[in-house]
Image 1 (tube, rainbow over the protein chains, first blue to last red):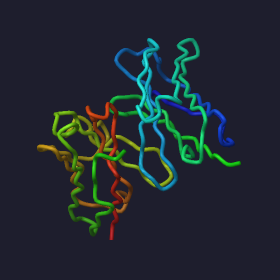
Image 2 (cartoon, rainbow over the protein chains, first blue to last red):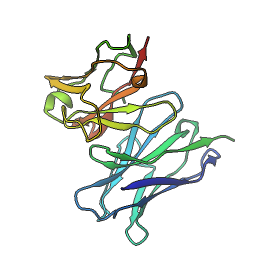
Image 3 (cartoon, chains in turn blue, orange):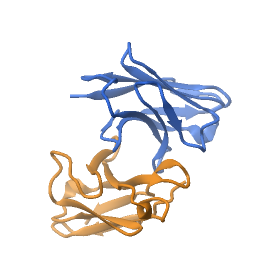
Image 4 (cartoon, rainbow over the protein chains, first blue to last red):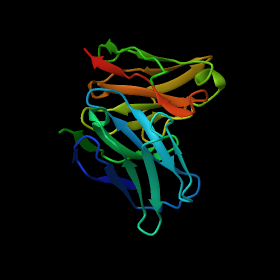
Length: 116
Length: 111
């Protein structure tokens, strides 16, 4: 059974770069037809889609975050990653990775806090 | 950018039926893009409940059903149970924003 697990920096200062990785287990990230997504949820708020990558490396980002986001895939390690530059308090959230679409398999999420 | 509007909360007694609406626009639901529904239990990741407007993944009880008409979609829960108390989100694609969008979320309260 496919599982996703997020890991990475949990506490950042304003202007730093967020870096998270999503490890894929129980299956291959190279499975045809699936996108690999990042989604976030600020505390007590709704869900926001950040972007996706395919195993080929092609990507698509939420236009509202595009200037700060990079999503990459490493097929040899069966994982994909998120980098978000110049973070502010508004970027504090639980970050989820998910297989899509629809988003049928989710990681458990990892909390990222931003504080000076 | 929540362009899919849901009621903040709905409530019902055990055994009753509740319906959650998801109101969109001609650039998302009205354009024919699929609507998916997710259930988020407290402290956990969302789980897909309905995909492709009205399809249930394996393991989801048939008490949950989805429908879509025009620029709106709905999730119905019949035979409400205490374990259904959770947040529910609709999700689609918006062609004018070029982004996957989620609804504002609805909290289901079991009285």
